[in-house]
Length: 250
Image 1 (cartoon, rainbow, N blue to C red):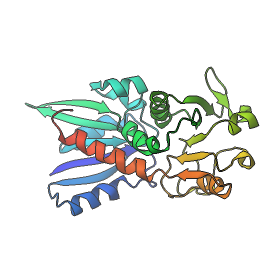
Image 2 (cartoon, one colour):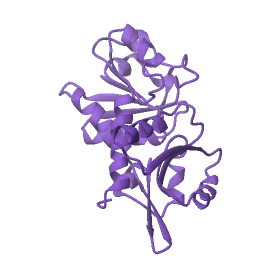
Image 3 (spheres, one colour):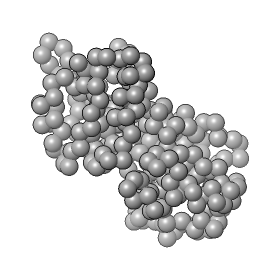
Image 4 (cartoon, rainbow, N blue to C red):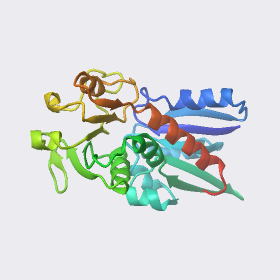
């Protein structure tokens, strides 16, 4: 039995286990299982690897997408450029184990946003600066979209929420939430924006997928915005992870 799973903390919000379990049933894959492995500290990763000798691959979620890199034997060029890993492939040979990291978030984000790319979409606001944010910014840069990075604290290259002027919001056609705000069970939370400035010209994309329509998206929808949930990204990046785990080209 080949084991796959998800590491991060907490994992109560995650749909990955259900997604892969359903996939295994739907596609009659009988030699695989998928489990959640909540790690309160990233240092517990080594213990997990020692205890689970049948592991063939892992997904990585918040807050460890960047921290996990120090525990791997190598990462892909794309993951290195982004600075975040969300897929680990286990390569076993003659008693040795090599752990290699990839970033399938890029595929999920690209597949989700590409249909909305138009010549008029020139500027985007990205909320949050974690591993998912890095993947979003990577894709937006490849699409030729200017990025305004926003965090709670201002620092070089990143503005604070208080710095988000009406002009910045009005001229940014895309706003992406990469923070956990609004994720189950705290579904009433949402990023601190002036939502009265939003119009039907705005696109709101939330990487949170549980619930499918977050408070962030709901408030945008009330102003006529186009809203995109994180579910399409989840499905797309999950299928890419499956390809990575099972293809000899990775």
